[in-house]
Length: 318
Length: 159
Image 1 (tube, rainbow over the protein chains, first blue to last red):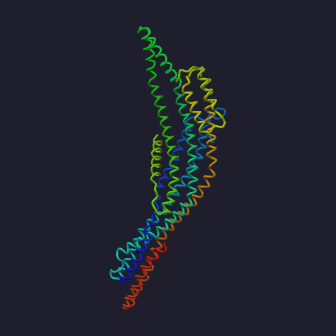
Image 2: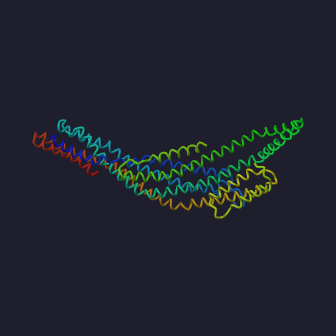
Image 3: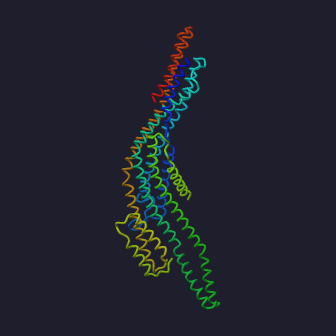
């Protein structure tokens, strides 16, 4: 009876040769990148909305628009950006679904192994231990595993093929949206910096006048050959100038912090815009990799997404 | 803050205001606002400069509103196209979810089919042995092995 089994094992081998090349597509990097891109979209939206609320908005008659008014531009942006967040949620669901199909295919290995073991046990029992050899069982497991995985790979291929033009279309819109949002963000930072400047403006002008005065007084002191009167004048102005130091340091620190925040925000926008291109390219690469039965090359995407993560984390820490 | 006098500052403001044209993009308008901002930071907080500051500030605020309005309109104009794409992706996602379930069910179905066929065949072998009909038992056993191996071949083919 064993010869039957051995012959069948040859058939298994042939079948395995035809199926063992099936690669389950690695969709996880794309799924991770989509989740990170979603976070970047949410964070840049929140940054801009917060910047719009940071300084008062005035209407054409210079009346301040209340923050809770539906006419306040920040509230209009909140509504528009909520649509973008929902779109990103849909993309995350899409990439998660691809991962689910792949997982279903991968879990076939365990089920297949259990199935073949059961069959093998029955064969062993019936033949007094001369049923399937271990190798035959392993080959059979591979056949079932790859068979189910081929189905999964086909399902992912169908989804990715249908989705690619849409992914490219959404990517283009997200890129344009992020560019538009960056303009709004920079527009608001003009006011944030102006407000700090205005807060300290009178004191800064006073300080500048003192600096000019002390410069002139020092020249006068030299020309007066350090007369008591000229030295006293320089000393008096220097004391006044020293008294402004703490306030000036506070101004400089506040201005520097605002400029750093602005810079970090700009970096988050730039890296997110850049990452969208890699994200679209990664989806195309996933599509090609499935067709060509190879692992997708996602190195550039991973680098871009890592940069986005760092930029977004930096901004969120502030 | 510079050492420029009132006339210099007035000319500076005039130069910036001269760049404002209706054809400017929002990005270019932001750049003009940044120029106005730098200009104002150079302007002394003294009564004689207040008029210049007021003009610069009012102009900057007008530009701010124009930029915001224009960009928000720009964003809104893409809402419909985005919604269309999102509904397609949602449909593809639903199909992929269904496919994931089918793939899972496929494996379970294979297991159930295999178990059913194997058990049916094994029962026949057991019955033949119980009946002490070794010839039939041998044939049944060989048939069982055929079924088991064919089953695995079928599994591969059906995939």
